Length: 256
Image (tube, rainbow, N blue to C red; front, top):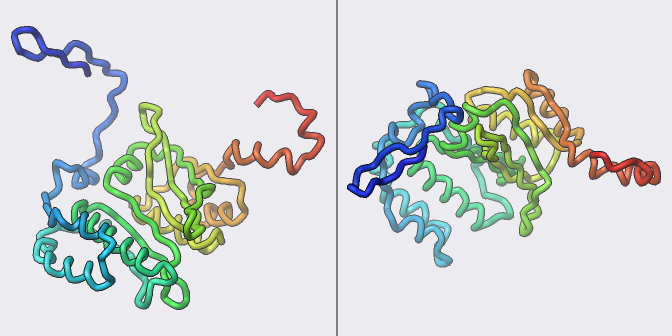
C-alpha cells in the first residue's frame, strides 16, 4: 500500500497491491502479537547493566530478584516454558554462560513468547543452547513449507557450530525460525535440537527440510521429523564433488 499526502494536508491511498496480501495469524497465535500481549516495561538500566564489564556472577541474580515483583504480572502459557536441565556449574563458558542466561531471562521478561532451552552434559555443564523469539514463531506458523537447517557457521572463540533454522516468506525474503549453539555435531545433539525446536513450534513439522549432507543430521531428521520430506543442500553437494569425483569432475560441463 502506498499512501501519499495532498497539498491540503489530507492523506490518500495512491496504490494498493492485493496480490501480496496473505492470511492473518490464526487465533491460537494471536496472543503472540505485540498488540495482544500485556505490556511490561523492565528496568531500563538492565540492558546497560548486563553488558557492563564490572558485572559479577551474583549481580544479575540480585537485580532480577529486586525486579521480580513486576514479572509476577506476566501471563505465560504452556508453550512459553523454559527447559533448563542443568543444576550445577555452567562448564567452561564461565561468565559468558552466566551472561547468556541473564540475557535470556531479560528477553523473556520483555517478550513472554521468547523460548529458550539448554542442554547439559553428564556433569551438569552447559553444552548446547537454543532460542527463538515471538516473530520467528509467528513466521514459522505461516511459512513452514520449506525449512533450511545449516551448521556451516562457527563461533570463533569457543569453536561451537552456529545452527540457524531459516525459511522464505511471501516476499521471497529470508526469515529466521530459531537458532542454536551446539556443543558438537553428533546424532544425539541433533536429536535434542530438532526435538526442542519442534516443541517451540507447537509440534508442527515442516513440509520439507533441507540440510547438509551429514549422516548424523539425516538420522536425527528421520527420527524426529518423520512426517517431513528431507533433501540435501545443493550447494553442499556441489562443494564436495571436486574432492569425491577427482578428474571426472573437471571434465564435466558447468551447467549447474
